[in-house]
Image (cartoon, rainbow, N blue to C red; front, side, top):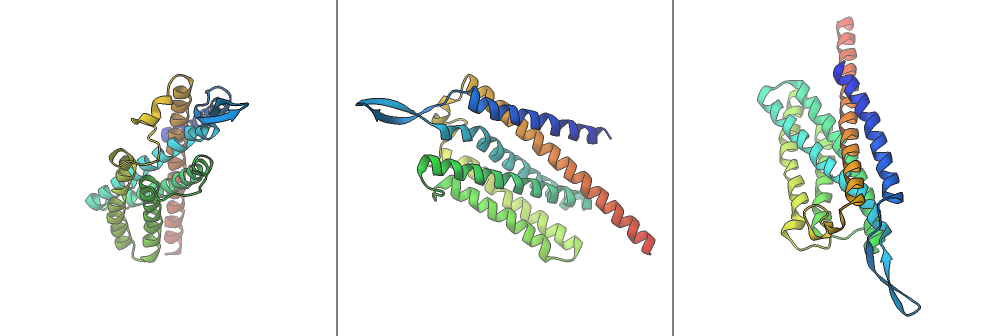
Length: 238
């Protein structure tokens, strides 16, 4: 009951924070300059409206990495304890991961089109993240292709652990290799992140993580209720 209330509260607070961050991004946080435009013979800084997307793109991308970690963690615990509940937790975490991946890809494509005039560029970060997307899709394909519950859970756990290795690689690769993809946290392109911009970014990040936690818990609650109903049904039929 306590966890149920926490999930609901987190969902509400996360929704408020992400909405507030959206308003803060467009109404309060100042824009950065992106090059110059010639007006009347004078070089005037050109506002970078696409930069506003980063307030949401970065939090959903980081959430996808973080939730993917739980896919691997619960998979490892399942291999250790052989308790089916951890297989269920890993599967639900994979569902939430995929949701954040879709949001990351959409927001990222909007930014690349606005800033690079292209919907997609095969640079290191985008390429490794695209591979991660395919791995998560493959995770569900694998689960749906195996009928035996024990084998399905075992294979999915092993695959989830191996697939997660792409997440830290994708996160770090722009720090190892020169890339046109900006490094917002811990990179030179993050020098614009201070004052109102930093506050807006933190609000968006906290709100997105709260939403991720709440969605996971609510989806897990739904799955547990479904399994209980199926167990009761099987008992009555038996």
